[in-house]
Image 1 (cartoon, rainbow, N blue to C red):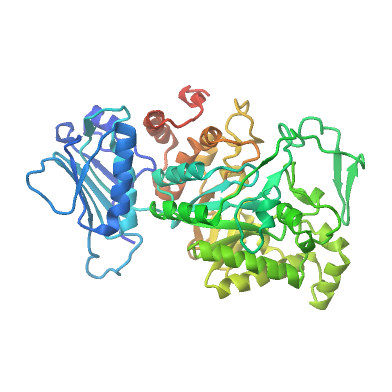
Image 2 (image 1 turned 120 degrees about the horizontal axis):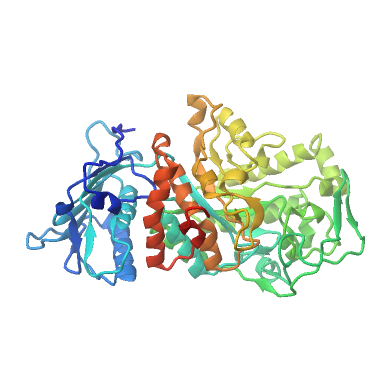
Length: 563
């Protein structure tokens, strides 16, 4: 890893220049030049890019300038000395002694009179440099944009910088998903975790099993308000070791009665994958198993432990241990899951497939005679061992296709699969355990990084009934203090999650993620020792103006110094 002397903002520059430089996430090294040396960007500015591999960066910048400022810049592949205003993107060769591909090489951005240069020997980092350039632009629409004179050297702290979106509870169309991907790109994130299946809806076309979308993609209603929903307050659930008791026994869940659903065709999935790839974002699909599978079982009940029970797509939120939502661990079930994963892996170039693995209630396996017989035949001492067997079996199949599984930290139960990556959501305990076993970890603890939780104690919008203020997100440190230096290397990165029980449209998505995604991006990208919450809040003021320019929804309460 290259070493740079970390510098703070140079207060010797004019106050005006300092006010113009408000970059999130904070770069590793930033020098501010004289105000008189600012670059002026107009329709006469030319973009030079001799390397076709940088076309994605060129296109993103052109589209951003056109959409937000109405500027249409010309692109050239060769320098012309007659062009007095130019933006140059250049892919450099690795210096002597460095490998051909060094992820932790920097991008370098230099803005000065007449020219802006963004260089790196990593095309992805040049794209990241474009996101920094965007944040140097004024936040008011104009046909003459003043860019401060700066020199920036920058690179990310973590390899994995992710955000998750649940499209099962509420379905979001392709246009919304693409907007979401754009927001990740603007925050220098490189992984999009697409939560495609759950109890509440199956969202991806599987050609071999058409009923997954014909039946599993649709539910006949959703509860109203916070769980358990309006009109259901008197229904009680008691989860016993071998049964679930519901009182009254004939209770019927009241919902809004509105049919909800949708799914992505495989062609739409390919389109979204390309859109993300053009922004250097890898999409990791999630296909839930062995639990959170009610939508799949509504379509194909023969793969459940109680096929005659009348499975239906879930209409209420919360952990579904109140209902049978686990796959039966039979050969025909594994055949079904392998068929599904085969189609999914053929669609997604990602090396990683998320298989869930969380919240699998063991009750339904205990009640199933066929499952108990299977456990006995395989010398599995208990249902935790069965959970481990299930995950190991799926991992072996996924590995045979050259892919790696990611799972929520419950995949540790009964013994961690040998090549699996752990996404630690129930706090940090699972992540710590996996790192000590020398397996990669993505930190995503619910109490710190679940952006569906309310932002204020008395929020002005319905949200999951937990409190996650901006400062808590910002101050989260993904590397637990109890890990030694060697173990800490296995913390691959961090991810924010957005579950959509109470989120049904793009405006609400934006309201929930902004500005907490800004805080998350600084966790993922910037050096730990650079973090400073008051400084972050100051930089956020400019970000809010940029969101106004882009038409992005966020809570205006943040504009109040005491929200």
